[in-house]
Image (cartoon, rainbow, N blue to C red; front, side, top):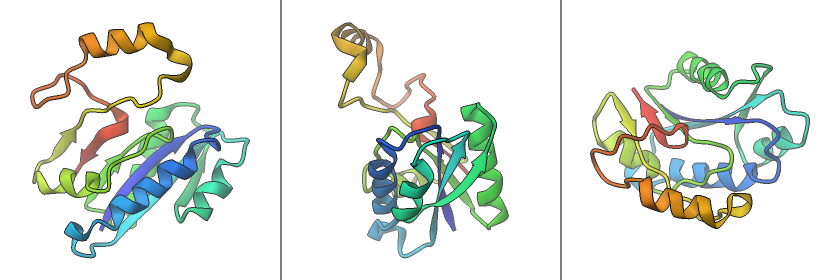
Length: 153
């Protein structure tokens, strides 16, 4: 069994798209039908994140950590207790590609630190986009570690 863990704090505006993309990755034909859990860790949520996540098919776990790393760890403990052999992490304001989970697992590695791309700069604006494009490496050998694209066995 594989698990996708998504920490969330008041993410009702974006959690639906995130979980839907995770569910699509869980159904990738190359996974050969291996079961996949999608767990949204609700870190001190006070909005509708939980209901939307459940409606999209995710399991939910409520914590009061106020810390994304601790929320990820709580989701990892839940997934491991349920028998997961691989933990894939992404963020609630992120969408993943349909092949994302399969690509992580197929590397036959103990850990995968993937890259990310930004499609909506929103409030960050043009200066941040230029800085990102000038300093970010989207290639093998990169030095980035993102919770939005991380996997461990």
